[in-house]
Length: 162
Image (cartoon, rainbow, N blue to C red; front, side, top):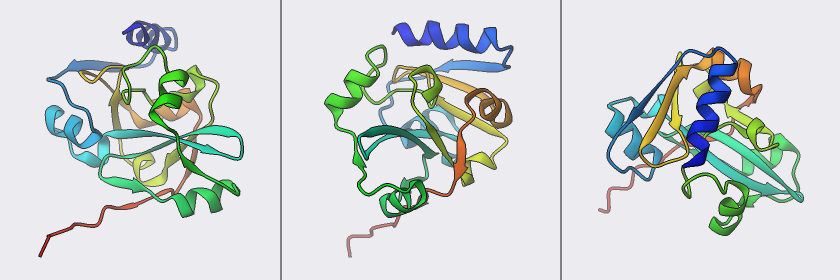
């Protein structure tokens, strides 16, 4: 996809140290973590929220879920919902659906990074496709993207079915 080349140029122009890996098709952040042999707490899940007539990029670890009640409260929104697939496709036309990187600054979108992911030394994320992953130091990601660091996620509840 076109974004990968633009993303690599953006990182290179900003003298960011990163690596790029490819893996078999993986659609969810947890699948990416498994394919990359990484702990899911280091893999970023990019979630697009629509609230109060604006889109917001929320970045949480693959191991956690976005807490919409916390999003509304923390961001001061009266209304917040998950963006639809159609909206995401329009917002990120240069990415495969659901494979957008957590680089809202490339799209004029505010970025909110969950505090648990901000504490990790490394971050890995989709590079615009379901096969390409960018790995970099979290501190470099933060200085490049300037996300607002707040607590927006909760642990996934395990369901046993019994």
